[in-house]
Image 1 (cartoon, rainbow, N blue to C red):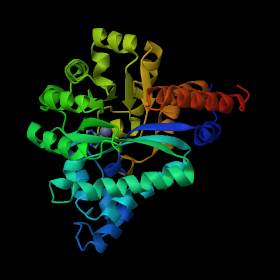
Image 2: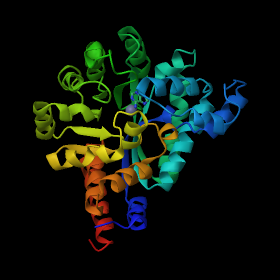
Image 3: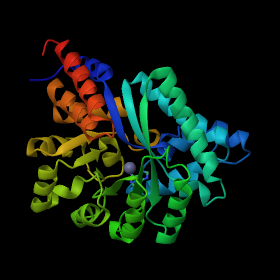
Length: 343
Ligand code: ADE
Ligand code: ZN
């Protein structure tokens, strides 16, 4: 049966959603980048927003990261980090995202001489404001750049300890190939000891072995991406048995050519296998869409129905760091929403 695109679009727009895989620096829209660059008197090597956006065409993760780090260069003041985060929160509020767990990459900024304090204070101020004004709940995850060394990650952890009451977890991102999770085993152990929750990008471009390492050596609670788990039957079984969340990002995967066509995206196969798959936006300013666009992309390409889309959203709340009572409340809201469609 051919599904009614408008109908599915309307359903997705009103569906309560949780975002668990979002790099705040990846939500930096070109328009805002130009505005902040001008304010900070930093030049961007593009004449216009349109020309900059034309450069958003990537063959792999590294090509994207080069542009992503260049864009982040214009962020200097506390106000810049506040505006960046506020713009993201305003956007997701319009998309019915009611809970978000966001990554920030301190080293992207501290390596340029920007104070850790300015970064976190700006982000946190916007998050608190959105909680008050929109009721959006949040968690904050400090992510280590895996192309840098262990000592730099330890320095970052040290800076984060001062904000232990604001930062809920640590993550691992950036260039995956050649930088296995095991490189950060000791930092993750120290972070766990300090009470941080743990997640890591694994199996995005890297092999299934990196997912094993993230589980066994880093002892993560969620795998970010994890697409490549399907290459390994024993790993897939373990992920199903443990109901380990996989935070998938469909538009990111096609933009970075991790997956060639959306029709080949594994999310539906993963659900059928019993994996705890969830859908998120990763770096929405660069990959063509926020949560709704990601849901719509898989709904269309894989002909997913409302029940399956609602299940994906419920999975994200299950995988979130909200309390069991809050998770139950969100699950109920989704069930009520689905029932309002007569399903
Ligand atoms: N940093 C920002 N986006 C990323 C991604 N998709 N993979 C790894 N590191 C990232
Ligand atoms: Zn990511």
